[in-house]
Image (cartoon, rainbow, N blue to C red; front, side):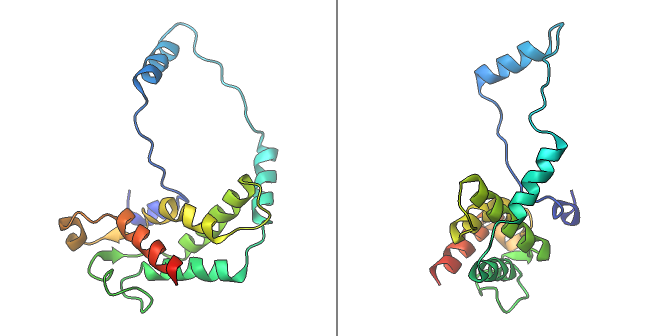
Length: 161
């Protein structure tokens, strides 16, 4: 997909192949006469209620600042980006990444029973939010440096400040 379309996805989650036993079960349950019965896990109303709950999780100002600083540091033409990044990144993350870092942090906080989003929540969602938004250059590819490597280093450096 083009980068502009990838940016519309909140997370990039890599799913590996199933284990051998799981693959046998998939084949067994999907190739027989009776197909498995699907059951609703959530209603649309419950999904909307959870979305509302996530949006109400408070975020301290320094968390917003960290998310913005992290995203701005991915942009090679930004004064906020470190010198080591500039030759490795062709295109950095946009404003939507900040929104998704905050929403992801709020969701993680809610799921863990926390009453507010913390720095560790932003750090935990940084990889799936940012890696598909940081487009590496030929220089990075030639050195086997991935977007994930770049995001990890940025998070580490920013967390130490």
